[in-house]
Structures are given as C-alpha cells and as structure tokens.
Amino acid sequence: MSGHNKWSTIKRKKGANDAKRSKMFSKIIKEITVAVKEGGPNEDSNPRLRLAIQNAKSVNMPKDNVTRAISKADKDNTNLQEQTYEGYAPHGIAMVVECLTDNTNRTVSNIRAIFSKKGGNLGNTGSLNFLFTRKGVFYINEKTVNLEEVELELIDAGAEDIKIEDGQIIVTTAMEDFGNMQKKLDEMNIEIENAGLERIPNEKKELPIEEAKKVMQMIEAFEDDDDVQNIFHNMEITDELISAMEEE
Image (spheres, helix red, strand yellow):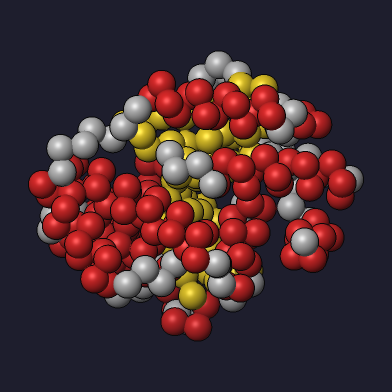
C-alpha cells in the first residue's frame, strides 16, 4: 500500500468528522458522475461505475446517496474534466495531484496557491512522470477471502504483487491489466473494498518527523480542496510519522 493510502485508511477506520466525511462523499459523487456520463447508469455494463460504487461502500456512503448520485448524473449537464498537476512539496518531495473539475481556471489557481503557501512549487505537467509508475491497486478485506485458494488465479489475471497488510489483501497489477483484474475479481465474487489506478513512487524519501509533518500539512490542504480526487507522493510514511499525526 502506498504510504499516503495507509494513512488515509487509518483515518477512515478511526471515523472522519462530518466535514471530512462530506468531502469524501463529494469526491465519490464526482467519480460516479463521470462514470455514468462515460458508460451509462447500469453498473453491470459499466466497470468504472461499478468500481465507484464499491469505493463508495468503502467510506460507508449510504446506498440512497449512491442511487441519487447515479440518477442525477444521468441528467446532469455539468462537464467535469480530469486534470493532473505536478510539483514539489517542501524538502524535495515529489507530488502529483489528480482533479475532477468543471472550472480549470479555478482549480489551477487553487492548486498553485496551496503549493506556494505550504512551501512548495507547481511544476509542468509530465515533469515528474519518471519518478512514478502507474499501477492498478486493489484492496480486499483479508477476512473475506482465502488467499491460498485464489492466488494462482489472481496471478493468471495479471497480479504482479500480492501482499497482506493491516488486514487487507493488496493486489497490484500493471496499468493495462487493471480491467482484467477487476473482471476476474467480479467473476470470483470477491468484493473489492477499494481500487484505482495509483502512481507508485519508484523510490521513497524518508524525512525527519518535523519536516515530514509539513509535507502532510500540504497533503491535507489538497484533500480539503473540492476539486482534488487523489494525491500521490514519494515520501516514506513511517510508523513514527503516523503516531505523530494521530497525536495532533
């Protein structure tokens, strides 16, 4: 699991406050909207929508909210665009911010402001590609699957790495095998807790706790922006850092 996702999972398990929970739901609704516009409102024939619904379950989004989001998206004329921004956080940490927005001018202005105010700088699109590799990553509750029974089938479907961490089975695939793995897990009736295309750092950088906390403050500022969907970085999230963040 990428370090930041580990921290996000811990926060989710602890229970988010109402404001954070609302932010998570808003991000899921945007993903549902894009999925419906791309492939229609039927989850059986729309893999992206099916995945968005699974991710909604992982943050305990009520079923009624999901149903309303699908219904509204089918009629919504809002044009959401996927945008990616890259730059450096304090202390040389590379960061990629993925957004869904209906106003790119507003979004780039907000992203630039966060980089600047938190001691970083926004770079050119594509400038950090060499530091990350895009992979498909699937998170499955360890208690729901006997890994020994399904491991060979997952490897045949494109699994490059399978590991157990914090009660989850984490399956990593090449980007081009993401759809194959999603289909295979569906066929095997294995429920996905969370999944998506992630930018996995080729190398991670460990910082002293106080420096790392400044980077985490930037990450959380991005998370609070309504247009931001995902943040990826190459900072090592240590147990010591997690403990320090939990104490705040």
